Image 1 (tube, helix red, strand yellow):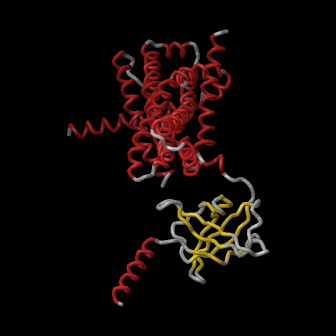
Image 2: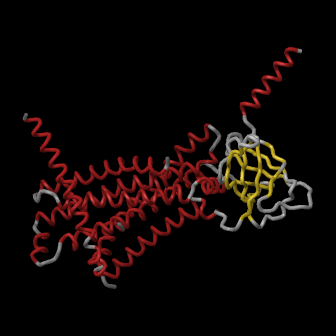
Length: 156
Length: 257
């Protein structure tokens, strides 16, 4: 084996290792491997308070991810936040009286939208709206209510 | 009056060096078509710059990852958040430590060697000899080194990050008992491909240009004596390290705001 050939093989091995490492970072370390490439349809959900919900937060049903939050904006007409949920197309059997609530993963974890299916025969279509929603739990409000309740107990 | 003149002299010589460095970069880039005709020169430099640096990068990557796993576990377990160990290890490696430590090691291992080699070529008048034979030394000697450095750096940084993630995995999952699935799943859900990984690769690409450029310029611009070569080698390591750390702040501020 000539010297040049040996050199070429070693350099080739080095570059291949580097690319394998990059591929590993892409697939195993980052979310590229898990990115959902399929189509999705959009459903609106209005909340009084979305708390810490962000674009790209997961939308789950029975704990399984069925979509992602695509957009969040404020509706000046009825003073509520609108979250646009991108539901993956294969989950097209979601009843239109589904209940959407903002939940927190763990005590201090990230927030996500949980869907509880209703019993309606009609299914949600693209551009549809989820009427039944429950806002995010804001810790200060809960504590405030608790203290307020205690104070009322004391007054009686 | 004297100190004013000294200040002016320092400023002028600094600008002149900066100008020479930029002219050299342009001259090297103009050698690119010639390099395409002689890929063998590039392969030889890739071997010297990339392959020979793999060992130090691999060993430090593994150990940095292991230390991150250990330190991260002890801090995170105070808050009961050991589950996010994978995120911590991977984010710090992919975003910061991978590109920066690789660049520092690269400057120490490959950059200093490059400077010394080019400086000695200049001191022994090999570069002038090439010119006498109507061979452009900038194209023939410097361009392959620059391109080899630019290609090698992102690959080495990726290797560093990958081995670091496995180092953290070995300590966290293997020795300290973090759940295997949690380690990877949390990492995959929190680390973003374009936000984290691609930005890290962009960083190491920039560091590749800067480190190799400094090394080549210091070697090519050195005073052609033994003392001059030794000073050029030292300066390569010092300037590269400072440039990498300073640029890292700028790039971080631009990319992860």
